[in-house]
Length: 387
Image 1 (tube, rainbow, N blue to C red):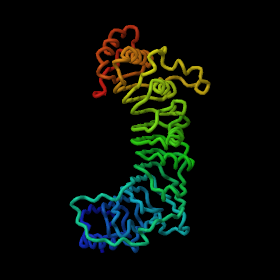
Image 2 (cartoon, rainbow, N blue to C red):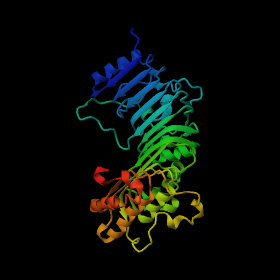
Image 3 (cartoon, rainbow, N blue to C red):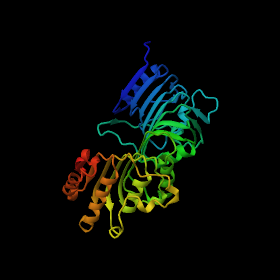
Image 4 (spheres, rainbow, N blue to C red):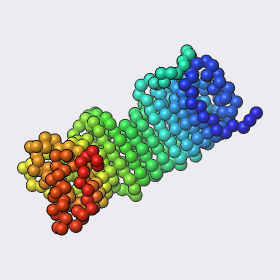
């Protein structure tokens, strides 16, 4: 029998013939494999064992009799689980461990988890025969596993984590190299509760935060984006937020790149003043209503706040983009003053994106004031489309 270490299956044939062919391959070579990459595989059985696997990539077939074979978690170094269905459980990784309630990924350095809220979406050209899902495999597994990742460096999580997985206890290193989160606020909560102290690089995007999640949003983002470690990059993008931002609840002093859909002037100024490491700020809609009668200076009203007396406005800010100012015709003069103040105040600005209504006026202002403000020599004024 040949020795097979790598196996890659790209299967859109869910017929009995296709399953039989896959089953033969997996039963013959599964125990030898160190690398397996499978899409829509429906032929796993309870007897199959990936004893030596070091890299596992699976795009799940929720109609499979068994989602996965038994896997030796201690050998895995890289694991990518895509379109994880509700019936998923850590039970598949108990192979070779004495304590069946404790699962140790002792060699794993990179983990990617992509969840699905709905039923699996099949390709339209997939050939499907009736599959009888194993009753034991499909049953809900509420075992409160203890799952340990002692060497994990990189974590990627997309979409809401299933309750059965959140119900487990997790052990992570106190330091992670890279964290990517997409629409999964609970991932921040899980890491915070697990005692993670430092993440070198964070990229997080949230496209739907409800009003019910407001408290968790501030608690978890404050944990992730406050200053307190040697992080190089911390990117946060928030869209479709079900509540107005409250600058008094934000502790994002460590954020380096921030993108938000909408905020008022007070929040905008607070972000600039309380985020000393901020390099890039993008705001889709800035609301100036109620601000036009107030004296204007970035950060002036925050100086007396003792909680932030040691924090200076960002000296590393290189790019700002405001795509739209709400009801700009009524607040035109104030909007002009806003951009003029930022251009004067932030000496490291390289590019500023402004609404089209203002681009000509701002560009002329920059040109006229280069003699008084030498740092304006290299600044680019563009509309938001070319930002």
